Image (cartoon, rainbow, N blue to C red):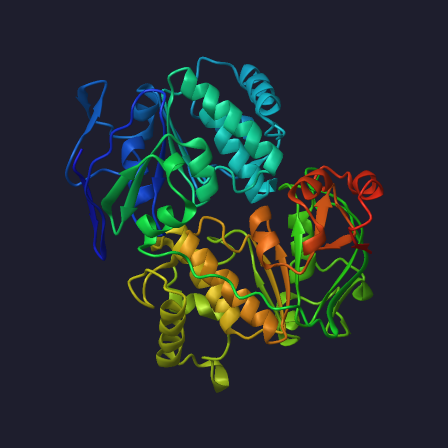
Length: 504
């Protein structure tokens, strides 16, 4: 009640009050930087409020750390994961459980829970070998194993197939029916309307509304959240030109025992088109992105061609000279250096502020960062703000803006709007389409099918290290792509009606 949390540059929560009933699925809705995650971290004991308090079952409580929260029956799935890279999946889960439980039993529980909820993950795998999506599955499994009374979920469905989302919703409804209260953060408005029975809306750290989302529309929820409806995308017919990226029979053995072998990957991306690759996390996306970005240079030179040049053995720097820019799925650590300022993070992929002799023009660097912050509406304390001080969605906007602002001839982008609010997602999608209309070739890897259907001209699916044929967006259906995500494209394509056009 009356939760307030201040930081030097912003008031994250300002006298926020929230009431959650037993067995209620309660949505927390707001744009990036609205204070949602801060409020949830206070409830979980990871952040201490400056003012206000928490009442559980009518009794005031002080939750000083996550361990005390778990003792009260509060579990949380973070958007930014709290996992130890050097430990296995089971060991990470074990850290949040009673230590009297032997590790062997934890391994069995993890395996059983993963199968029960359709969240496949190997309990013996070290976390550093997992993709971002697989890490999110670990977080969900860890929370479910505590049998919580209050379960906080921060963007839990961003890495699941439509079929897996439905299965998770069945689980969440069952937990709610058993009396578990669920706090659900998502920017997918249709999910909130389908799943949640109550909704609290935050804007600028203040509660601006409480509603029953099932009685609202996407448009009315957007107005409550951002003050207006998101802008409509202007779709123009693709005017595909010359091939900019060509991948020829790309086959690479896995880098570690937990990776995926790439097997005969064949596709191309042309000027003026957006090509999307869908798939469940952990099916070869990471390996493919490493090979395309130049982080993995084991491919034969001719297997990857950029603007007609054999680039299989080129590193990231040389590929950027050919016009290739890249947005990785991991924001902190690969997309940005956490402790460095936004201005200095431009230097990771931009050298326009570096003069002769390697001297950096700080004035020019600050100007460029300020321009990106303004253009992409990034909520930050200016160019000098550390990357780690931004919310996940605002950091994503800055990283995407940094690469789009470089005016690439080829943009490869992974999870472009993961954790980004509807207004910012619409802006990023619009910028991608502007880039396409200006002649850029764009490759998007995403587990958000709605996103791929909205911005792509053609679609592929990756499953078990293999790539499906491409299909025109207008000929594809969510059900069909969902089947292809299980590797069933040969069977699915064979029974498609004559109206569908599939091309290799």
